[in-house]
Image (cartoon, rainbow over all chains, first blue to last red; front, side, top):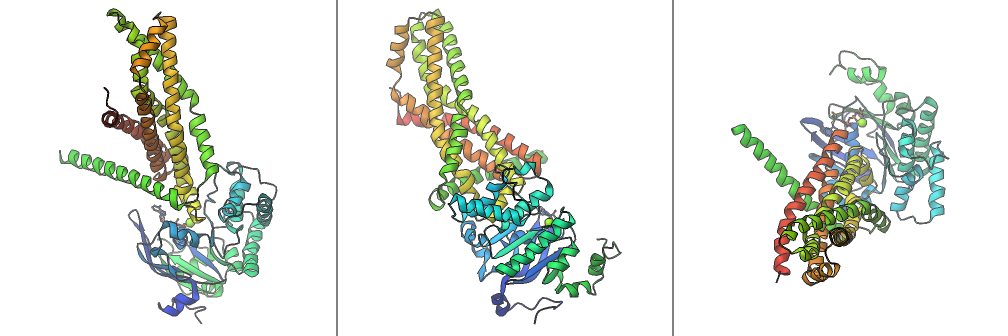
Length: 266
Length: 262
Ligand SMILES: Nc1ncnc2c1ncn2[C@@H]1O[C@H](COP(=O)(O)OP(=O)(O)OP(=O)(O)O)[C@@H](O)[C@H]1O
Ligand SMILES: [Mg+2]
């Protein structure tokens, strides 16, 4: 029904019930800059939504808002029926534990080694058995191709390895919703394909809802059920990958073709 | 002129909001003590960091302060033939003022700086956001264990500083400057009461709390990358040192009401 619509559907109770995450009219000013100017978007249960957009367009800010790390100046974000702005920091904690998040800069705890970083969310979820923790950490590391690196400290990892450890930490608790901020940035093509498959695999096996920010169009077309294009603080277009590829908007055409045309010079 | 007024006004607003923020952090930590999950592992680790690893600094500070204070008191009192009072003067001064204030300043420099730098780095590298994203409250995880560890460690460090200072005073006064040992000790015990020791430890506790919340607040508010962490660290040390000196005056006056000097 909404599939492939170029305009987001009007706000209605139905949509807010059906969507796992429901974003309406979200605005945010950071410093003197209006970063988000009214974002409307729904994320459905079990889908993989890719967010595309120019660098500095506010994608990471939007992602952080989805788990309440930043709060919108205007507008609402409803996750599974709860309006996040109604919750205080302490009440947000149980909501956040249903998410996994990979930060753009990985944000590993640099006082803890790789194994302890990945074990962290497990311990917070109440897992106490060291054998279970070790096993789960090893599995998560194996999924990102880093088994055997448990004892390294984050400062001694390469950029791509850090990213993958961050990914392992985000998925180790099998959250129902995972937010990926550029999961494949800085990775070689083989690792990139591995991560793409992992994201798809998590979706297929555990019905994870994924929101992926990426600049890698190859990955985007591979993993996306739907694609949203964020530009100048608004969602310019949302639809199937094929809709985005064939979009009329010249800016999106330039973006997809990887060309710096007259429309792209902001 | 107006420019100056505006700048002063800005400084004042910054000062007021910083003070307010630090007090709020204290209140939040108090709430977290009941609402959050206790983290004994972190608490023990910070006891080790704050209490155990500050030993050398506090011991050296106490020893040389006691020694130099004994020597100077002796030089002056010797003129009027009152050298037997040196022990009492050293012990009271160490207990009531020198022990707590100097330990406080040293710990502010050593521990306060480390805390704000560590927490500030975590802030600017999004590690605090990562904590929050995993449903961990940064106050529970970072502030409460440090505050508890500091509240245990500081009074003990102060007591230690006092003891070493008095011992060093004894060594200088009796062994080096030949004050009769019995006079030194007798006068000291006669004029020093347990309330002097309590005063020192209470001051230590208060200073410890001030250091923790100032340093953690600076760290949690750090922004603008490495420069910001540097700024937060400097601010933490400067502000907590000044607050220690200022609070010390009011504590002296306040504690004098509770434990009046007869
Ligand atoms: N904490 C902050 N304070 C002030 N401005 C900020 C802050 N965080 C982000 N911004 C600004 O918001 C804008 C959007 O940033 P954001 O990180 O969301 O971009 P992005 O779309 O993720 O870009 P990229 O693709 O390069 O990661 C940028 O102009 C940035 O300078
Ligand atoms: Mg980003």
